[in-house]
Length: 77
Image 1 (cartoon, rainbow, N blue to C red):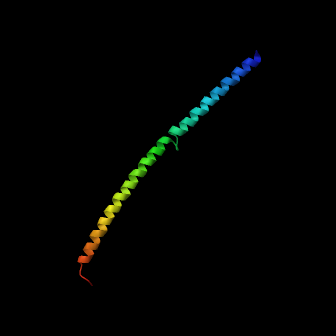
Image 2 (cartoon, rainbow, N blue to C red):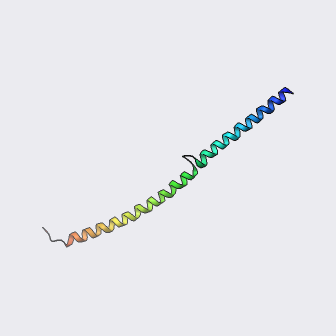
Image 3 (cartoon, one colour):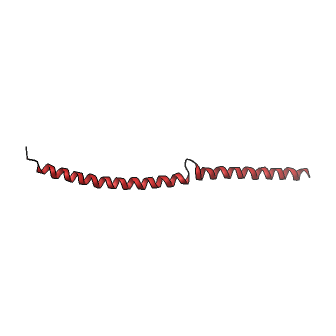
């Protein structure tokens, strides 16, 4: 009888420890510093930065073209 009670208490403690551990790991995965939410946010930020780089490169090319056209209009020295 006492062995049965000890085994039951041990099983309950094991289940509680397992639930607490699973909760901790799930919390890390979904809300921690290295979470899925953070990953998705950084992925979106990367896409936005890549688009910004392309836009700035096009603008830079236009400015360089304008600069060289203006430079060619200046008299030779």
